[in-house]
Image (cartoon, rainbow, N blue to C red; front, side):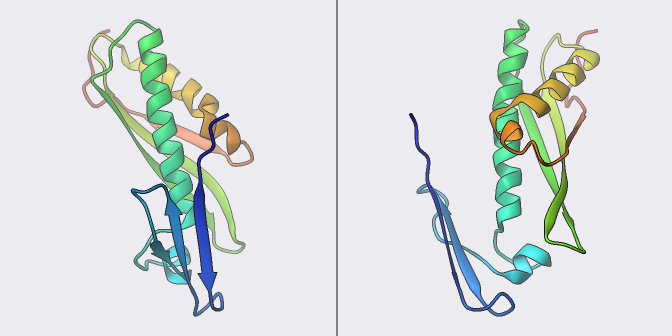
Length: 144
């Protein structure tokens, strides 16, 4: 079994406090507060980290799915837009916008693989209570 670790700490009240998030040695001690979560403040927040985890997992899984179909991807990118419900603290949904450069792969096949991957990658399965939609658009359309 592989175990990964992330940590968080919060000091103070919700309105005036501040927290620290860490996930591995490359993302240590990142500050977050109420404004970075619910406003436009500086710092990271848990929802953005969920989006980053989903986008990263999705890219790797999509590259693998493309390879399984017999194509060699030059690259795949994804942007996760996390929509927060303003009236209650909850994630209303996540929109994945993805592009790719895959020689010989048709747009239709790219869209099919992106849709499948958005529902099947490890992080997407862990987030099954949240609606995840995908908007695929090839960066370099090729093939037919």
